[in-house]
Length: 103
Image (cartoon, rainbow, N blue to C red):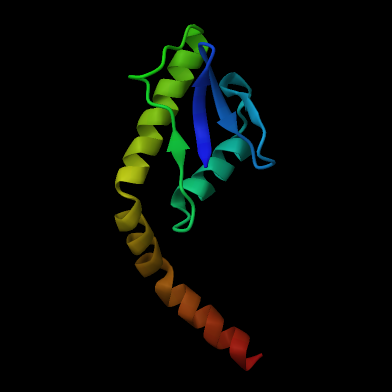
């Protein structure tokens, strides 16, 4: 899924409804949605590279560059992130599941 894209010199992001919006209109909920897509092992998170596209809007350039670098780092370490998250919360999940089954 294309989550960050550059078109006509402007940066855009995908909202949870699938619509692309200008990157300077992004909210905290939009970032949380993109994080959920990026960390979902069944999702493919795609974004346009800054090397292949030019951002003419200076605000878009700053925001896009920051988001791109953070998501690139997260996606590069996605497997390790998922494994660490699973092991961190494994004990709590096991306890919850045991409690849920006995209720």
